[in-house]
Amino acid sequence: MTELRAMPTPTKAPLRIVLVDDHEMVLHGLKAMLAPFRGRVDVVGESIGAENAVRVVDGVRPDIVLCDVRMRGASGLDLCRTLLQSDPGRKVVLLSVYDDEQYLFQALRAGASGYLLKQINGEDLVRQLELARDGVTVIDTALAGRAVDTAARLHSDEFWPGARQGLTQRESEVLSLMVAGLSNRRIAARLVVSDETVKSHLRSVYRKLGVNDRAGAVATALREGICR
Image 1 (cartoon, rainbow, N blue to C red):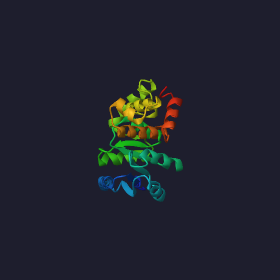
Image 2 (cartoon, one colour):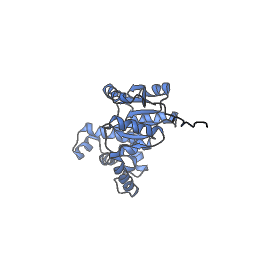
Image 3 (spheres, rainbow, N blue to C red):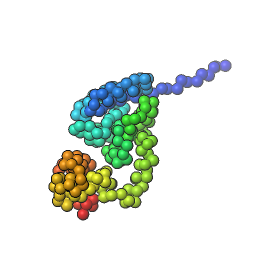
Image 4 (tube, rainbow, N blue to C red):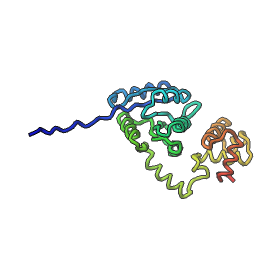
């Protein structure tokens, strides 16, 4: 009688990832966190900031790009859009310190395969990245429940104008005052904040609305019914 032997279960190749962050120390920290999982993860490239990230990704073609959300210059959201425009099959997982569902919604609108918080431990990070490789959209558990509630409220129009575009309540206030014709200095006085804070809010508003200046933001606000 021929002896039947069980066929060995095929194992997946290590997950090939590229790391992108604008702080070299963070990149070193991520590599140290992932080092104990070399059989499951292989860091095949890294980029300090988004400027060189496209070249790095094109050169090594990883399974996953793990990228910080907020960086100097181009953001992780911008990089995600750029990478997916050239290759829609790419998978980008955004990593952030911001426990904010608005950032999560922006990430998903940009086409990201996940949004994870930086306090995640190594084992959980590897597991979530493996799921993302397999086509699962991964969301930090701390955000998942709140995101469902927020999405339901957005659908019911229970949020402030601009929430659907990803604007925070304060950003919507700044935009509304700008549409009303107030200068940055007058907006700062009205909201009792500094001029620099107003400028920071406006930069975020421009980025989220996809415009470059005040005129574009005003036009979009009026067209989309954010401000009247």
